View (cartoon, rainbow, N blue to C red):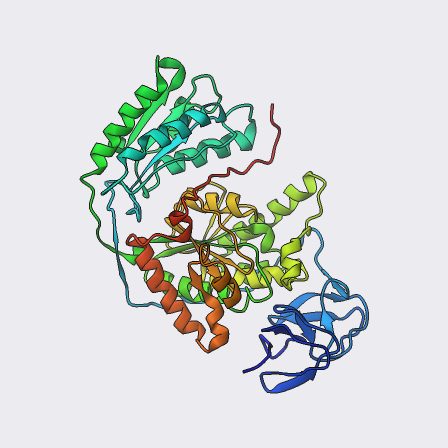
Length: 493
């Protein structure tokens, strides 16, 4: 087996598949190189001399520029290269015209809803409209645990600090996210819990919910009832009684919406876990299903690949706006656009944002982009969609759930325990992580390095998703981890 992997024939660097020592002569494909320095797993070695000022190629694209002469066999990282990215760019659409590869459809066991897509869970949710009633929501959730069982698959509260003292986009974001979650197919019943004096209360949020199934949603304004706990429990019992008649039944995979996210990435994420998710995405979209890719700041440096996979000039224009709007958001707050990757990413072998982005976008597979969504906009186009949201793990995952994802595939090289409002499947980029953190990791894509193919892993991941959609719990669900985070970017009054 090779000790290094060269991703494309153009690449000047290769990635270590295990820790390597200075003086080792190691193989990569049909070549060899003698290392001049120790090389941690996931880190890059130069396959030839790279001159100062020369672009460093990985994934077949530049990932930065050498800041000094780099000898063949040397460690290539933050000490001898930096990003080539800067500010906004002018983009030209150069359509690649990728095609959706039709695949045989599959079936999962889900909960059909009177309106909208089926749910993969049948949970009872308590959504506070404002942070002032968070503790009421949590107390109700604790009291209502006795209602869980059978078709009521769980009772969860989703506290957050917003809903009042917000302006403009922040206020809109809170209203839209709460309305989206109140009508989410994974919730068989929802109690929307308000205080009564907030600026994003029930009266303001309800119009954002559109044409919803009123039999599955109840509303409570705490200031208008003598005992909000007693009143809340009565409503939750009513919803739970309604849910007990719900049953799983066969549903086509074309009804699945799966969010795609990564976090705590390492140098193997773009080689194992993210391409595995990409194979899955192509399989699902080939069945008529939907995937959503987000974390826009982590597309910087690979955005043209996505732009050129847009099926129309209109979608191309929306993607350009998606990218440039986020750059302006950074600049408006006086922050550097390319303050990325994180310390954990760098420790794992990722050097620049281009390096991170080219690995991150592997999750999108090769299918055409069919839709571009604003933050908290519900998905409507089948196929691959791009969603406006930041890279922060919980904020981005909540955004995916808000846009309609019934489940999220979350690749990681370093591991993370969190869960968002929907099942959050953790996919390890390397086997040591999968073995060490069995209580966090659901799927090991590191097996690619043990001889499995990407196609085999992608098909296995599809089966895992169908099992999870049919009721198999993820690690975050087994651990009881469910959180909510709404994107905030403006003034708090």
